[in-house]
Length: 289
Image (cartoon, rainbow, N blue to C red; front, side, top):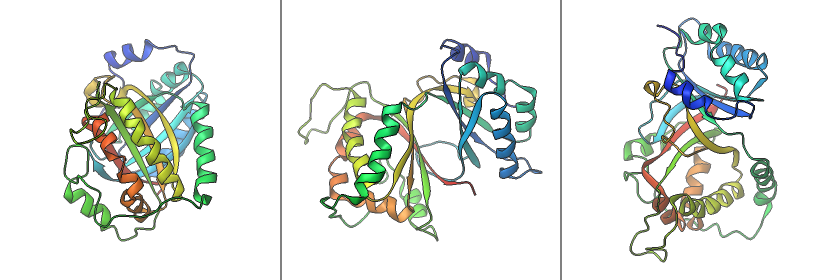
């Protein structure tokens, strides 16, 4: 199988932006029959280092919980000083040799995370678990809406809930696409309010971030999606997603506990109003492994 490379359309889209700006590449890939994940990741880290880049995270994909995304075997997040350096690595012979036997490769292009967001997430991770005044009343049963357009199917939810080690940490990789204009249900206070889908989703996001950090989870990385550089049938997919986020939970049980909180569920109508149809992909991963 030939090594996956950017198409001409993907290269054209990539080169429209400032080559001197920092960039993040998110890899999803298979694994050759004669190599381990650790070997691939070690070689990828060394290759990135030689091109002014750094491997910041890698993991193994376990389940697509929401959406119609394909399930790869592994994933990794790499940060580069410039877009030019990142592209030079992707187009290098060594990169082609590394992935020519992988069976599948997808590379998404993301913005570097804003410093303000990084600082805010660190503060929340330190302060919110110690805050004693949260209302942690919870409802029984699964999150409302299972089986609807932006939620897990019943089969996916059951598989997630039945995992043999619910306390093992997981990283949820989120791909998000917003409506141009929010569509609130008729029975909500915000019905008819003229706001963007992004604004509506951010109303949900604020409560979700407080809820998850208060229970000991933490946001690892949040950024804007730009395009696909490799994969996606050669289509740059500039409108495929709008934003990207990675959140680490202290186990599947911790994730389910968060989704049961009444203060979390009270914001779900903002999420539904803001996300486009099929506007979320959610992949359950484990760090390393």
